[in-house]
Image 1 (cartoon, rainbow, N blue to C red):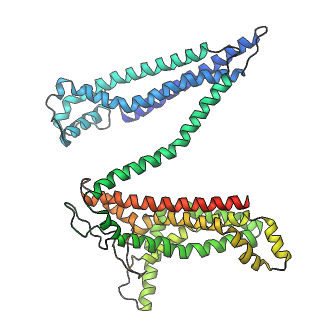
Image 2: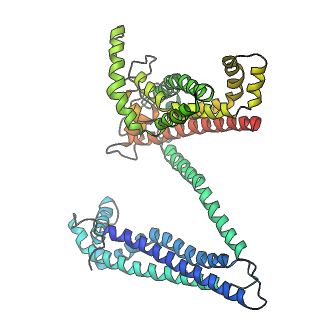
Image 3: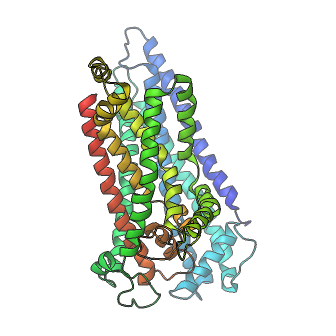
Length: 466
């Protein structure tokens, strides 16, 4: 049997979905036609419109088959491998270990057309059993999928009657689909937390949590963990210095002044062009900001530091990364402040001006204090975005875990160290690699708390002014 190419597998899966969709369309037409036929009889009055009967048949035809196809796609590889292992060609395979998995993977790739020939001689006898098993289980899956589709369609078709509440059933099915869609984000977050917790627990079995949270020396090494080498304070300090101090010093004043100008002083034509141009900054890839920081901002800051006589000035500095990061998050602060100021009731502006206050005094003493909860929510969201940034730090601030207050020195952050620990050939059983998951858990908790605080502040603001 000829091997099945990877593109063909993708095309077959898409073709099966199109086949199910075509059957669902036929079911929709059949259900609607039967409903119209019943409505045409003397004295028959339909509870639901014919289109709802059609949708009921189509959903019963499509949903079970599509669900089975998704489950079969994840289960069939294991079934195929188990069948291959029962053949005579697999008798000489190693019982356990990496070699066994490599041989099976090599044979599977050749059988599915992902590579032209085997790389391991022991995999050659397994190619034909893999191809035969794949062919067999593919036909089993197609037959079962079509049987489910036809069974579901016939079940729904036979239930069409004049008094059948098709609209209610269809709406319930749609509501269930919407509920499942809304649970995707929750389930994804739950999965992230579980994966971080599982790996972090493995790390904390090797290294004390107190050392990671309160230690001052960061120099992890492979192999058995050495004492006083997993201190995370330099990483936390670098994260705060770049993301919460320097970046905020740049982003908050510029973002606030931009929001005040666009809401109070700018002409409508100017606002129409300036606001979209400003928000383009939020869509620029962070690697572009990293190049800008490393090739333009950092060398200029080093020359400036040398001119001031600052010793040991580096082209990798916290100041360069912080400035560019601050520019990147200006749209977050500006957009939130813009919306908050616009949401202040017009009566407060008019009352202040009617009492004799100037426009400048109205902005400083009325509008900004009234919009402050929303502005603070935007600032906290911007901080959480800044402390999670990676590319700018890696390219402009360096990877040195220094605990220094000198902004011209090279520092590193939690995210930069996670990248460093998980790139290259690493042993996933060593404390050095597992430390990345512990750092990710700490970062996740901090950003989660910042987002919760921001949402609570924004909720208070909305309750006060909506």
